[in-house]
Amino acid sequence: MKNSKLIKVSYYPGCSLDSSGREYGESTEAVARDLEVELGELPDWNCCGATSGHATNERLDVLLSARNLWIAEKAGRDLVVPCAACFQRLKTAEKKLLEGPEKEEIPIGYQGKIRIKHLADFLWEDVGPKKIREKVRKPLPGLKPVCYYGCLTVRPPRVTGARDPEDPKVMDNILKILGAQVMNWSYKTDCCGGSLVLARPDIVRRLVGKLLENAEEAGANCVVTACPLCQANLDGQQDEIARESGKKPKLPIFYFTELMGLAFQNPDTKGWWKRHLTDPRKFLKEKGLI
Amino acid sequence: MSDTKKITANHVARAVIPDPGFGREVEEKSRTRVSSCFQCLKCTGGCPVTFAMDIMPHQAIRMVQLGMKDEVLESSTIWVCASCETCTTRCPNDIDIAHLMDTLRQTAIAEKITPAQKEILAFHRVFMMTIRFLGRLYEPGMLGALKAWTRTLNRGEIKLGWKMFKKGKLKIVPRAVGESRELRAIFAKAKQKVKGEGSKVKG
Image (cartoon, rainbow over all chains, first blue to last red; front, side, top):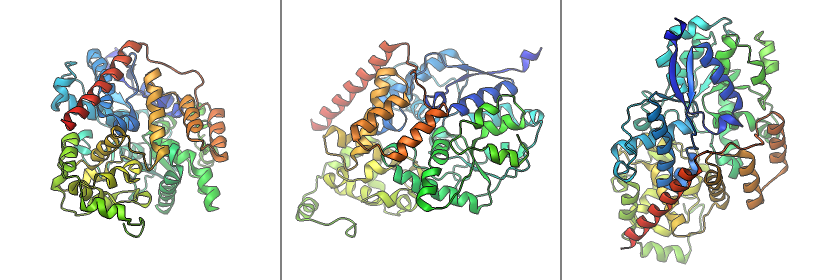
């Protein structure tokens, strides 16, 4: 009986969710269980190539994602992707394989029968607000987050299918259902510098500094993300930014799935907070949430 | 531009003798109509990393149109671009500027031009090397190799790395793709195709 409500999808976690974005992976799986979603990890998936793939070799970029799409279409279920970069690479490859000259050049017979969705869109559109509301056991009224979507969940819209690429609302909507007091700001989709953090950390720190400053100015007491690289940059660069500027903007940076787990009172949440580089536990205690 | 970059006799000579085929070549490779740019500057206006660029995005496009090949391919701009796709999203002429930057990077690599941002290309190379061997990213291995290669490791980064390790954010044992034969075939096919494209352009 209960199984009839189960939504079954294929799941492409991507490389980060296994290491630097571990708490994103763990909270995604926990929340999926709470919402009766069965995430079937794509068998033997490979890296999408991310920025380095499309920057250095266009054909390789498409081929890497083509293999994943081929596996996903064989599995026959919609593909849910939590990482913004993976999502955008898969969508880009899909478009090329269906419409571009790649259709002939890479004859894997991909037909586009499955939908590729970013996790936040999937939870909002496919699982739906009603189901999410039902699962909330402890609302989060003390939280004043700004939602940070970053670049690749929305851009470019003709690839991602984003309806409002300059002002996306899916995470805002989810957080509101969780009882958080979501703040408005103008930096929802501004870039954090992404993988430039390894070669040019100075660029990333300048961008992240601006984001954190504007989050505080908007009255936020935390930032919520849906991308492992955004979270890593905003979370991990705060020490260095504080050292350089002399200020101490210690804003907790959460994954939206972590806050869903918190509102659902999922027993696994404890393991997630300790992985953050800017420790959110004191903040959550102050708000009476843990 | 003249504020940030000294114009040398070499630059003037290049500006006078541009490469007339370059614009067309880039349009073909990138499949985006660079020639339709009318310099509205929306790309530069929205670009988050112009502070680190030596030529602005709209200038890079103009230079491609004019055939100023060396100036564009030797610029920092093509490497510093973070691929955030803001320009592509906002261009009123539908020029895929972010993708154009990819094409320019790939052309610079194919023509063995010394990159103005060596560390950024080194990062891309180490990243793709990891994918070639394992099929998935292995962060500790990639970070170690990159820092050893570029010799840019500093105290802040060691501290951050150690903190990440303690928090369980760096996996010790890599997870590789099982079908390594498929992976090898992908890399072989990608290499073949790039060679083919290069010869087509020359011919």
